[in-house]
Length: 592
Ligand code: ADP
Ligand code: MG
Image (cartoon, rainbow, N blue to C red):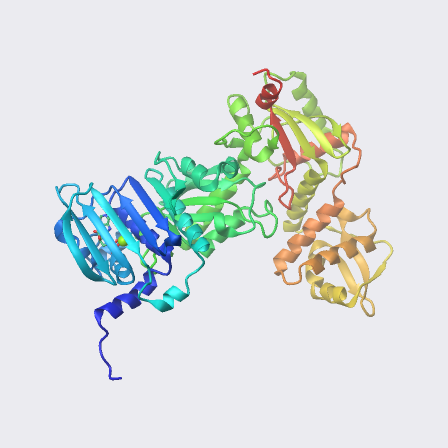
């Protein structure tokens, strides 16, 4: 075949392949156009997972009669004039590709009326070819119906996913735009049934209720970049899940830059990192993160689908996202919940917040404080006890992260009952102690303090070959944490030291347990192995459920928990305490 120039239709179909991968891509482009046109209501109707029909109706500015045909030409846009404009794009579209691409691979009918014109226009195109054009009466705005997508590109058609997959994908796309544009009302209908609706109230919280479901919304906390970050041109806000809530995949980590949904593995990682030690391995938070920055600091023209962006200063964006979320988690004590929980809730979402709202005026986390409904002697009592922390435990010098709690007693030899300024607390003694030990261990570890205890009698341990190999491969990591093991013949090791936290335990048993931890996860990175072993050591060392504690022991435990950085979860991410607020108690007893 001689070299020849492809005809326009073929060129358009090739180009379309880049922008339109699946029905959801059509929805994305049409919704973006409606938003760019200033619509306040966008109605999306889908049949057959988009394959049969996708119709997007908006009440935006419409297209003037003399421009309707141009809108379907390739590289036709009203949003960009010069290449310079690319550096400060304010609209979602700018490439002038979507309508041409969609039209070239489907049958399109568009009805539109510009808001300042009396008569509208109806166009019908098939495979990009104009079939019909007529004036028509129509409300101001635009309706675009796309039928038989990929009808003339059999290869694409063959690779389309199942109808249900596509339905879900479309719902995801619509949900994301609804989050990014809470002031716009979105209605999604699939096969004649309403699948999603947002109110257009302007409140992201309202959209999240619709998009994520009320139950999961209750467990979200608000995030906002800090005062000191205000000087930075980068702003971050949104919602993120409390540590007790998580998912098995990253799909609910949803990121937006200047109102545009983006995919960014690195920023996703920043979100996950903010939950370090708050979530178990393989669990991910729900996070809706809005990033705003001057348009010239972000390049949106990276990919035809515009779902990837390039930041001028990616590290700064990473840091601020991570810091903002981390702070929100650590600061739970200062956050107001959006919807009050009911009954016993985890401390994380409701408690601290209600605690805050109740004592806003007179409570300061750094001072013992005084609460009107408590006996004045309590403050004194607690202060005395703080001095009475048994020797050998690290003197608390960190700021308090929990309200001052008074121990009332123990339940089931496993839970400590305590009273605080905002109600009743039930503390899991084992999980709480794990958290305390973990933070102490990490602190000593980073300060390179002595964490190992030499064993008196050099006992040996013999392991199965596979475990012995794991130990050998991890000698250094184990040594870092306090396990000094020396080879002693085949598959046998002398135990020279173990972490001092475990000094009262049988060294052989301790090592055997830790080796199991290595076994369980054969391929993790060095840092993860270390982290896992440390968590294991703290778990072994922590006071067990079923252990009866004296009042003094319980009080000492609580005092130490109050000074941990993250008192609300154990290192594996499980909650350390439940809280019932004073209000909840009153409500439950019918006093209010
Ligand atoms: P882009 O959005 O990149 O400009 P499109 O191919 O998506 O390119 O759309 C081409 C042009 O058609 C837009 O620039 C806009 O002027 C017009 N247009 C498309 N959809 C709408 C709509 N729903 N309401 C008003 N104008 C529209
Ligand atoms: Mg567009």
